[in-house]
Structures are given as structure tokens and as C-alpha cells.
Image 1 (spheres, rainbow, N blue to C red):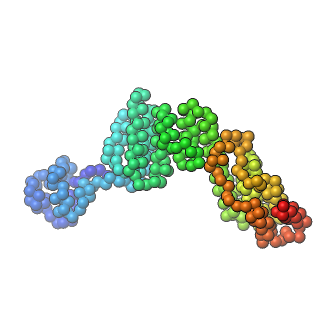
Image 2: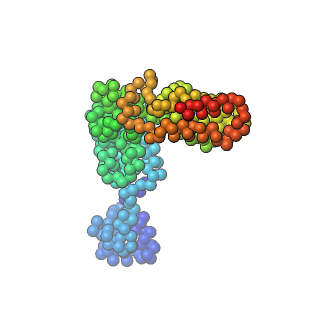
Image 3: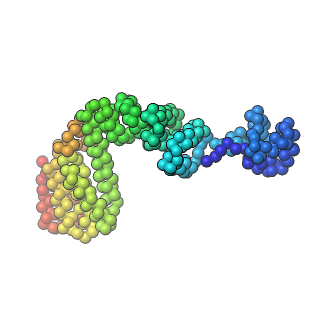
Length: 368
């Protein structure tokens, strides 16, 4: 971490320029003793001399002072880890005082301010009084608001600062401020819906709190499942890698009744599973999963909808207001389903009686 310390810079630049302390002193109109003290760090140049010195050495004043308002990310992380360790091993007053000094020095380094806000949030309970703890949380809020107002790094803000501020408000029992900050919509996963849920709970609205928690779990479940489908598709030709992904996804689908919640997801699972086993020279397993795929298409696809169930029993409003099915006709979806069975991967199954039976069932379904 850089300090405001021009001693080394003056020495280096004077030697680069090939001038003596006496010559530099004469140029500036000061004594040789003054220059000597600057170079040993015993004193600093008068503020009025800084522009002249910087111009003489052909550098900026910040460079002359060996100071940057920004800190490299690597140094930010090292400082954060060191301060976190200090909170656990040193007197609280000593560490918080150092934090305050760092904040003043690097007030426009928003990556660092984000870390300092997190340190304040995490360690405020260590303060020697409830009042001091509350003040530290309020200081963290002010840091977050400064980042919101001044930082142009939207990833920094949405990636953590807004949640830090919301958690501070929760600690301060300011539920309304949490909802004002995050908004009451449950569609967006960032900021964290669990913070919205806690705010509603704090305000005594248990119904909305449960709805927010279920919306969060539902969306994360769908995100995890769809990511697993991408991973499965990427590894279809490698049974050793693909099958564990498939089995875990199948367990999730069974546990959460995916056929009811999102029939399309369940169908994709069985279709990819069938392709995986066919490419892995396990045709009977492939046919078994094609049968399950057909069952989902026939029994669960239409009318197409994202549905709640007994577990997700608070999601009707969330689904109705926020999740809109893709605008595709039933006829177009049925045509696609037929095409899945024409995939060249299944060419060797064409004469298999079980495969033929599945195709016949799905063709009859598509014709209706």
C-alpha cells in the first residue's frame, strides 16, 4: 500500500537529473539542509513548492508524493484479509481507527470502500457499546451510498455493495429502507431476494416474506437445473462424465417434481439422457428415457405453464406476474417433438419395436 512519502522520489529524480542537493536547493530558493531533510523524511516540502518541484522533475504532483488515490485489486484483497485478521487478534479500537484512516486516504477507491463497508458490517458487533456498533453500521451505509452515487462500476454495485447496504439496514432494524433500496419486485435475483424476505419479516409481513423466499428458491432451482442441462449437453459423448450429471439432475427433478413445476425442463432432461446413453452404446437405457420423454410431452406439456405446487405454495402471484411462457404455438412445439425422434443419433433404433411404439404414441399425440 502506498504512503504519501516524497523522500525516495526526490532522491531518485534528483540523481536521474544529475544535480546535487545544493543545486536543487538553489533552484528552489531553500537551504541545502531543507533538501536533506526532505530526502531523509524528516520534513516535507512546503505545499507551495510542490508544483515547482514536480515541474522541475517533469512529473505530476501525485507522482512526486508517491501517492495514488487508487489501489490495485491485489493490494485491496491483501489489505482486506489483513484487517479481518487484525479484528480477530488486536484491540477493536486500534483496528477501527486504522480503518478510518484508510478510508480517508482512499475515499475514491471504490473497490476498497466496498471491502471496508463489508469489514464494518461484519465486525460492528465487536464494538464496546450498542451505540458505537450502530454508528459503525451507519458509516458502512454512507460508504455504500458513496459507491452508489460516484462509482461508474455497475458490476461493483450490483455485485455486492447494494446487498451490503441492505444488510446494514437490516441490522439497524430499517426494513422499509431495505425495500426502498432493493425494490419489492421478486423477479430480479440481484439484489438478493432473501434480504427482501428478511425485510418483510422485520416489518411483520410473514406472507410476503415467505413468498420472497420461495421465489428465491424457485429461481435458483431453475437456474441450477438449466446449468446442469448445459453441462450435460456439453458432455453427451463422454458417458463417464455425463452420467453423474444426469443422475444428479434426475434426483433434483424427482425431488422437486419437475414434471409439474416445469415440464419443459423435465423433457429436456430425459431427451439429453436418451442421447447420452445412445452415444454410450446403451440403447435400452436410451429407449427407456425416450419413453419418459414421450410421457412428459403427452401428459404434462399442455396447456404449457409454469406451475406452483404444495411445496411452492406461495408462488401463484410471482409466476403470474413475472414468468411469461415463450410465445410458441402448441402446433409448433409438437412439430419440434416429432423432430427430436428423427435425430440421427437414434438411427440405429429405427427397427426396435419399443422405439417404434414410442414414436407411434408421440405421433398420435402430435396429430391431435
